[in-house]
Image (cartoon, rainbow, N blue to C red):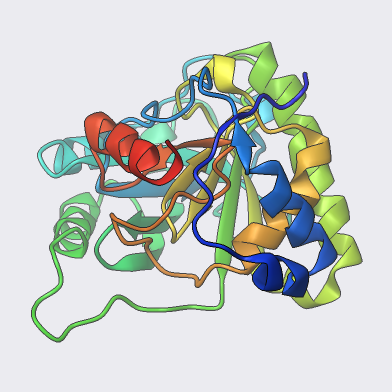
Length: 278
């Protein structure tokens, strides 16, 4: 499907700036001059202040349509009042604990990676039913606003999650799989970027019709309707953006694909996009 375009208010008279951009970024900037006003994407991200990923040893292609475990449900209960979501992910050579046999799901352990709109990334090597309350307290603290003079951690690591949950919806499975493969191939060509970008496949994130859905953290940006041919330009933009939670007022990343941002309500997502691009 061709990328649709919407009207973009050019931010400044920038002939010299445009000329100084790398060729691929120049093509991106030129494309974003005209963005389609019928784009349904902005404002479609479920509001969340914290997003948690539980790493599994098996890829989303093996997940049932509705995937849930005792640890995931318990963590959701811990975060229900703090705007947190808990999902599953898998990555090649990524951290995970062995899968427990059927009937022992309550004994499953997970490696946890979480991101908050205030403080960026946090990791917990082992999460199980035994320490869910402790981890819940840690995650709630991680969603708290920064105190005066405190700054969110900045890391070189960029985390990109692509929904490939085939059993939930074939659009995510098919388009998501093509996009994750395009990321792998592009990172294989960019040895300098391959160590910075941590690529993973995720379970259902919401919005099958926006497949492929790409979540970029610690920035907190969600992209939709991504196709495999879009990956090089999107990766350029991601790598050019500091690896930290994006400020609520900052211009949306990759506006042709932008669904919304962590830490903003749906109304605030729409207002932000309209302010910068209408």
